[in-house]
Length: 127
Image (cartoon, rainbow, N blue to C red):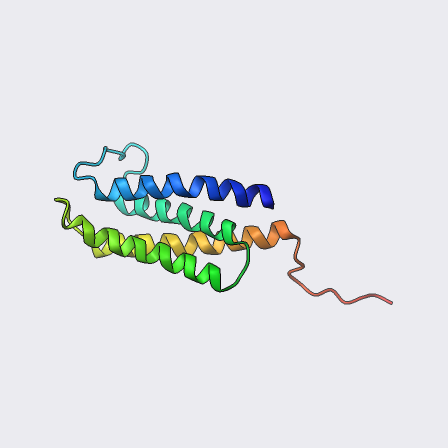
């Protein structure tokens, strides 16, 4: 678990920088050959960011809520800032960012629970 936590920590910051650059650059590179739908690109970016943040925090606690709220607010803030860079802010991009962040948190949490070996169903001891 510690390896995945450290890996997420090291990959989170370049991922964050790439997302900020991609959302604020006036003429982003055409990535439609990878994911043709713009909303899928937003969803995927914030899914990955939130999954890494969830892995870094490791646990269902207040720090996780703050981290994911930060990822969601980042998506909203970047959408607003796009209006100042010659691009058009889009509420549906923000919705895709938020859905991606929430989905990444859910998947990251489920993976954390599975890797931790937590029993998901109580088993009754047989006599």
